[in-house]
Length: 516
Image (cartoon, rainbow, N blue to C red):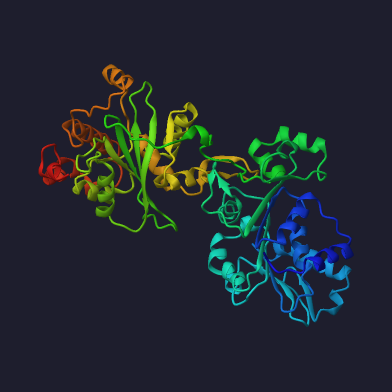
């Protein structure tokens, strides 16, 4: 528990004539006991005012350092203005040795002779967010501040003095604020104990939607908008936009690319039968962008009509060559004896990763590319399975990045917040790799396979992982690919399908097959 002058704070509020609303009152009580206070609310909920008065009330503490960090200087003026006005009304400001309120010049600072000061810093000038130990920090419009600025600069600024951090913001999707502050304040996550929970974190979601008053973690705070305004917005706005703008919920304006019900999408792990058809997706992470990961999801299709698809394992790493990833794939495509290979149809790779396909094929793996290259094809295949209830994802540690991505893969917003439909944002490595795998055509199960599946048999098929059937399918796909891309710059691989893989003994019964 923090050592704070609680009585002085409440006396300051009384002197100011401040009567907190329900959400603000929860924030002030939380600040007496927690270091990281998240206040996620609809616009005009008083979140900036509540955080600003928390900082303003510490004015009498010697050598107390306070910052307001905003995406730009003007965006930090709101909280600074509240502090400035509060000190003016309570008579403190006349004792300041320095007080400037220059919004456009980037000079907003109040300083008192006993060492207390508050200053606005801008996230668009990260070089100035250095060399200061802080007791109080407000992340103004925190959802719009880069998460890297917190990790590299701001976190260390408050740690030495064990300072407090306020995050008063209207959420903008499940971004870094959601992961860094909101999730760590929850004792349970997805019905299980939250391993990321930290008792120094506290959060609340302040909503103006009355039916959410009983939602755990929500505080209903009405009185800002009329009932007519709420109902009109409910009719005119999309449900997702309404939840954010009037419920302070962690959703994006445009919405998720793959909306889903977690209870229906995720399932408990089980041993995948040997006779199910397996396909491996592959998205190479050397894209040049920050955070690019190599994602290799493993998919299995059961023997029902129509087939259901199970995402049961994944490699999700960065910074390795093809040989490393080939070994990771082999380790996951073996039976329980850890030596007998499992049958699989293909490793479906991003069409632009030509060199990766060559290297994996030279290492003895069966590779191909999806029959279609456009994002809309991947989108259609994945969203159809979700809507039909035929996609199932294991709740295991390996697929934690997959679940993380699908919750944050969003449509980019148009000028009015509408989904553009032609552009997406958010982590996409696992999503793209899964889309590639789903575009590999798997024929419907035969009547015999359906009967065997109904009987619960898991007898392995007669064909092994490098069978002639696989080879013929691969040659067919390669031929189709070459025909589709004759007009593209692909001369460097025109002879690959005619001999390159034969030279390494790729057919069934070859040396590579025996080693595999």
